[in-house]
Length: 381
Image (cartoon, rainbow, N blue to C red; front, side):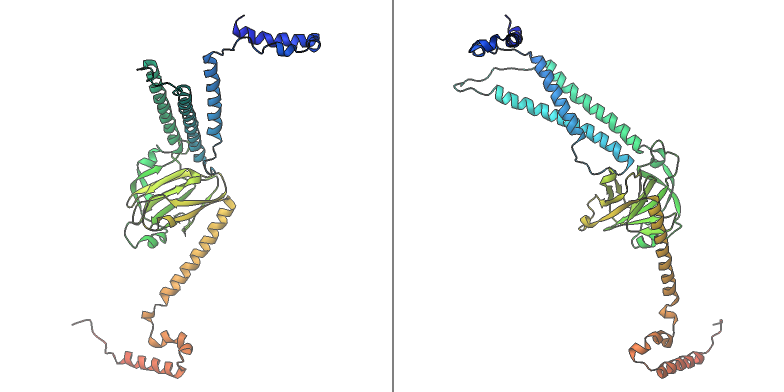
């Protein structure tokens, strides 16, 4: 009887004898029946198929459940995660395949005790070489096409983003950083934009929120030109498209928000942009990802994603604060000490300095006499 039939038929015969009662009436019956009269030979193609199925399932599971990425807080993040998961699945499958073959060969073809000669000289295998060249080439080509599509869906090929168009100007000289943030009506000029623009679905439309971003050692300044608000944190409403118009004051910086899966260089004298739409409320770190100096690691702030109601409340509070600061500045300018007489300048501090009112009166009279004694000059020389 062939081996494959023997190993299948014998268990069936044993089960039949059990049902007939013969096995229970015959002592030592099971011991007299071998488990298999001949060794069972499983075709290598079936083993390869089972191993391939197992390897594929493990790769797919780990590629979707690796847990290596932070929370996805934007619509663009889902595209990046899909690409990353696909690459992780392929990488795990190739890793297990290569390492499995190495381990199998190390065990199967290891030198046996007493073997002193060399192994068989085997050279070349054209079909195998074609296979292991064609498969990686096909994988790389597929990943390239997939990456291209993802970048296009995110707005990387936005014509408005890569061409010249009007944009709020940013300061470029030293000492102009804070002055620029107070300018609510910046001059517009045509410049070339680099970075991630509008997605194909949003091309030709303006973002709901526009923010001018200035990077300088070692801080970020966010100016909202439409509402005249300046902040050290980036506040955006959830579910609305945001556009960051970025430039640097001194050296190259880079805006990096891991939860958005976005990173863009911020370059002195050059405008770059990022457009994205958040989908999760929360506070996420915004870091500089370009070594920009000794305190590069401290150049961290927060991107706060809020509900539309909380975002409107934040804007209102910032505008009130801005107005209060403007009033303080106006009062400070109005009380310029250079325009005050000595008596008026010392009047608020007279009590603290121990100056008597009579002395202040005397100073006023003395200054009045000095002013009256100055002869009037004519306009002719």
